[in-house]
Amino acid sequence: MALRPGELVMLDSTPLDVLAVLDDGVTGRLELCIALDVATRSICAAVVRPVGTTSVDAAMLLAQMVVPAAMRPGWDAALSMQRSVIPYKRLVALDARLERAAARPVIMPETVVVDQGRVYVSASFVSACESLGVSVQPVPPANGPAKGDVERTFRAIADGFSQYLPGHTGSDVSQRGAAAEQDACWSLAQLQELLDEWVICGWQERRHEALRHPMMPQVAISPNEMWAALVAVTGHVPVPLSADDYVELLPLRWLAINDYGVRFGYRTYDHPGLNPYRRRRSPQEDKNGRWEVHHNPYDPNRVWVRLPEGWLEVPWVHAEAVRRPFTAFTFGYVRRTVERREGREEHEAAIAQALDALLRRASQGLGSRRERTVAARAQAAAQMTDPSPATAPQQCPAPLAPGASFGLPGSFTVPLEDGDRWDTDDSLDDIEDDPDGEDYLLAALADGQDAAAEHADEAEASESTAGTDRDQAVGQTLNAAGAGGMLIYDPYQEAQAW
Image 1 (cartoon, rainbow, N blue to C red):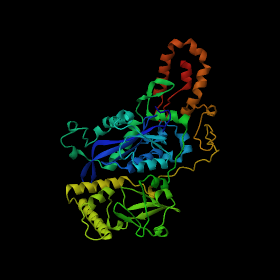
Image 2: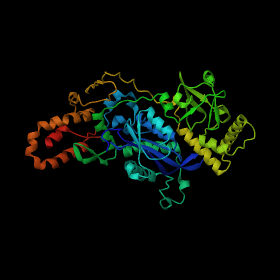
Image 3: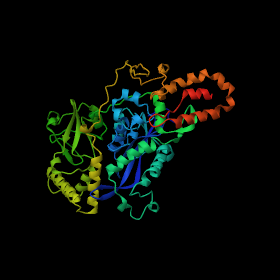
Image 4: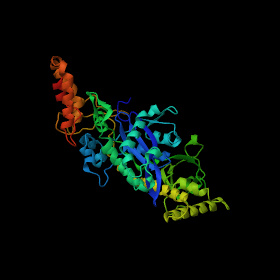
């Protein structure tokens, strides 16, 4: 059981029962990775990729969780956070990135629960979690019930989203049509956008039987309502991610800087900025003098080397020979087909030429089906993943210094000490009463006990009918509010009922 947002976040992946048009008319199966917050049952992030989840996809889930989901062109205004039950005005004063955000919670995970899959227990994923200060808690092997919440969420996605899409394959051959491949019409990017939209309007606004407000345990509420209630107690801490933070999340290798640069995956990377450090040991003595290198399997054209003065982007020496996007998987496939007849440098150049030729043939619909599939997967994956510094999200305002406070109109002020999180327990009594405003949700939690205490005598006199009246009052509160003004808890109605 989790009592606050981010306390436990479950990460898992599963095949998505939908065929997608990857590239050049080639269809393929997809894999879905999600991050589910246990306390609020919110889908904090969802990533769709061609079959074969990598540690990059898992790390990008962490980045998506702490970065607000931006409103996309064509989305209805009702999907924005401003129009939802989430206390928008208070949160946007703390985090400017929420101004044009969609109605999806922004949750910083404390502990992620993962299975024993090689992606989630890999050194790259653990390193990415450590860079964000996130603990990793693996479940016992072959223990599905240990991640029961996320497994049930996958079933809900299949029932509420996947089965309504063209190209739906079902979980087995008995649940699909005769021409599922011919029905597929959505690209990977389009399916990702459809899923993001469904998460906001189909999942986050759907009442969940496992979510109950402490003051109205007989009424199920939605993940957004639960997050709005809990964020009033736990507070919200903006986590800005810079370009360097995105590089930190990429898979890590420890390599030597030689005269030719750095090598791994049978690729050589070199840059003049490496000249002062060639054949020198790194400051990391525990790594045998090797240097920290981060790479993106979806974009092998470059790597990032951590030098004493900061990150250095180092390109692949044969990057100009390959004009179309490719992945490390595509490179490995071509490497196995090219026979080595000369030295290492000549062989690597021959692989680059063969890779470019394969991608060109596939783009023209030529070559074997296997080659077209490999090229299509590379093209689709490269288009969906680009954690480069140029695409880093907008930064939120600089965090307040220790000892400072965040004062908002009609809100409460919280003093901070070194190393402390936002804590609202000591100053909830300072919240202004504004039942008709958007700040009402936060004020309700603070005023509820005081209002109920003032009517304690009435509660004793009407004890026999309190339960019925209370449920009716709560139902009226939930049904009376419209879009953008839904109220979870009305302390005045609560007090009158008791």
